[in-house]
Length: 529
Image (cartoon, rainbow, N blue to C red; front, top):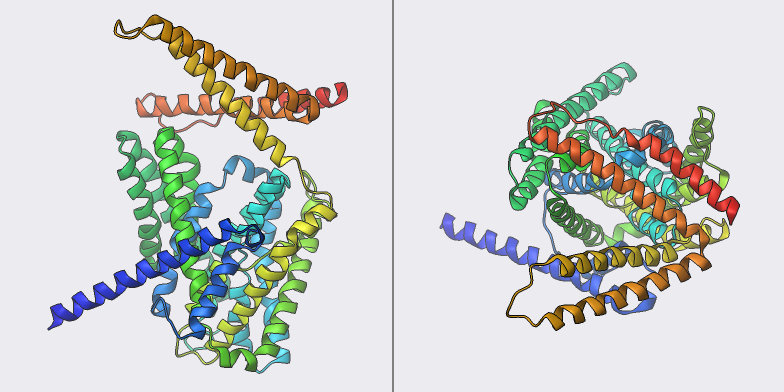
């Protein structure tokens, strides 16, 4: 009897998995087929579909609140940490640090006090709502930045803030969740102490796992095993750190940063790195799909009307608090040197601070026994829907009006032509140096060489045409050369580590030197133009 029940449960879980995957892929496909749908964030479409399913009382996923964080947070955070480049992030660590740490504290307080003052929510529950809404998730905005060429630094700050902000927000949420339940009491010294323990244990275990797997993958070259190790590291680190009493979120972020920037360089060949990156891209897409379907799926329509004033106050608090965080801390970070953020960049960072997957996961993870849980879910739903529908759809307008749209389409086309020229030259070298088979007519080889030379000439003409129309594109050749040279140097160090001739990875010496040379060359090029 028990076996039959277990089999039936497994069958139902598989059916739910397939339904969610089908719905997600269907929404993704339909959004690509119709041009007018492409302007709507994919995550917003998923929320709408989830709402529709909830309206007809079709529930896709049934998960306990305790499992929400353990299932959804590790892949969401690891995927973000894996993809962010430390090389770009370190130049913007000051504003990112201010936004991610002080910004979260300001956001929690800035949402909690107005909500508790003007609604029936108690302050402890309002603080929990503030913690849920302090996590930013600008996935669609970052994609728009890249598509329109909004600037590398702007994109890096938005991504970096979101990554570290999520970690701090989750820690704050876990510290606050016991207060409204009467399990713990709030005191500043105790909270700071617990925060230090949470972060310290998470970062420490994350470093051990990250560097351990990095050096382990040096010993073999099995792409599927290395891919599996990254998955095990994400979930394993989270569970181990949580068991030890630390922050699993900080552990996952640390592991993702180390494996993405160090382990993938010294322990994985380029093909493996591509396989692992594509795997995490799919996993991030799938988990995001489930989370955004869940928020629509879990909505109680009758309570939305009752809590409409709470939703409006939450939206206003989030928008105003975000403005205080970005303009206040942004200008404060400018005082400490580095490349300052101007008011146009700060405006886009303010308006682009969407809420999404992590906020939803936190809201759904609130214990069922907590009075006010449904209010938190409704308020988070309202804020997420507003940020996606209003802010997400108008960010492009802000970028254009503030003159922050770059030449990304031309740069992309130019990069494709450069890559095609390099590939065709390699094909030509292969044809010229290949050991010719006696079974193949020599004329066939000459004919193929002629075709490839013709294609190379055609591509060279297109590159020249783009350069004449867009002289600034010439800087892209320098940037790509710089990336190639730094990568060659880093790969050489990795080979020495694998051979046992070095004990630790060295920082690329050419990095700073090449940056200065490229800046000088670009400046001279602009003057010449």
